[in-house]
Length: 202
Image (tube, rainbow, N blue to C red; front, side, top):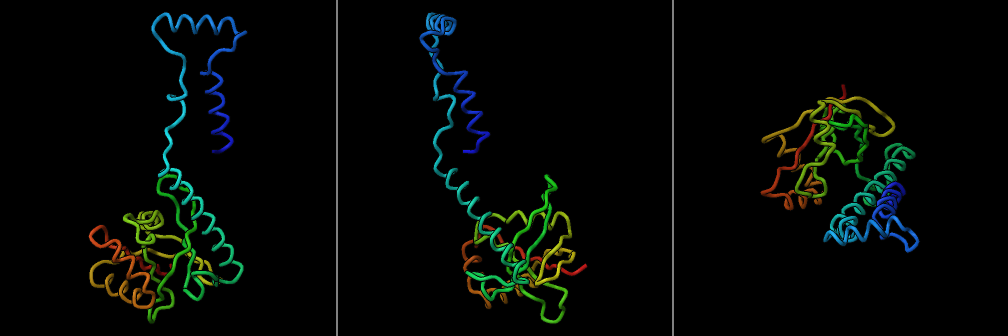
């Protein structure tokens, strides 16, 4: 719970708790409430019900943000190279703006380089095999452009959402090189087709 949330809750509790023995006005209001068939304020209506799924989701989100921050810092300190699970994998930092907030975000993601055009890379909206598309995909396709950090270079890109045989061919090649992508496709089968974006240097 944040400080702001805690202070807000304490304020609510102060306003809703039972009056102290020496609080004459408070005791009088309580007696009037009971005489009219009412009840004393209850924390049942003040405190939110315990929701372990929501707590787990908030924890996972915070953990993911921390992990992304570490990857981004390591990427920038080593000209695009990182260790851990991404060691040796081609990685870019995708800059995108929220469609509603306008706030800029940075998302690390693996990419596939074009066979012959060095100014083109492909990125894959896998979201780890989740049933929904990641925010960065929706933001990029809505804007039609973005910025990426690749190695030590930072440049603007145009965005093209691939489809049909072209999309399938690019995804299949990525899955051949990195079998985890085949597993993502298996997890999302019948739910969504994992989008593939072409990012071309502007």
